[in-house]
Image 1: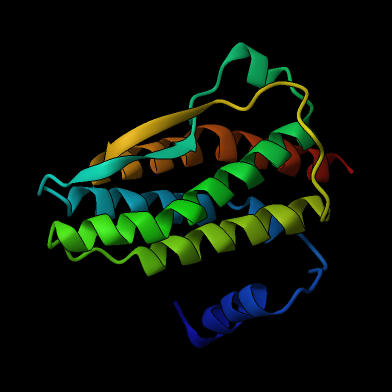
Image 2 (image 1 turned 90 degrees about the vertical axis):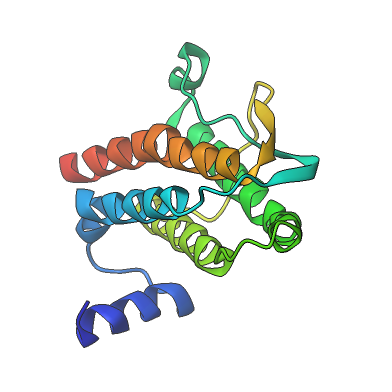
Length: 172
């Protein structure tokens, strides 16, 4: 990534600015970068690490009920899902240190914040709506499961919403 790209990324992370065009966020390679990153981190963890307590994460799979939700409701669920991931990082960090694994969860947290900002900029909304159904979660007990759920959340729900929002933007 060049200096210009780094400056743009820093601007996106540090300053709440509405960009003139949202097309860079709709570039498939941006999401592919995050998915590739998590896949590499997942592959690097061959050591088993069983957590001393289960961690609650969002259900990553798409079902008929979820696909029938309005886009704004799907966005709200993604925001809450990202919050569950962020809330779990301190516990996961503790478990990882007990397992004597060297895993960078700071990068993980940074990626979630970046994707949250991308979603906010694409939708240009700051408020979230209440869901009319109970959000589904699941409990995980290993670091491998943690990364698998995160990857599937990105590939499933997040990618679906971003693609839908970008199609709407291109029609305008």
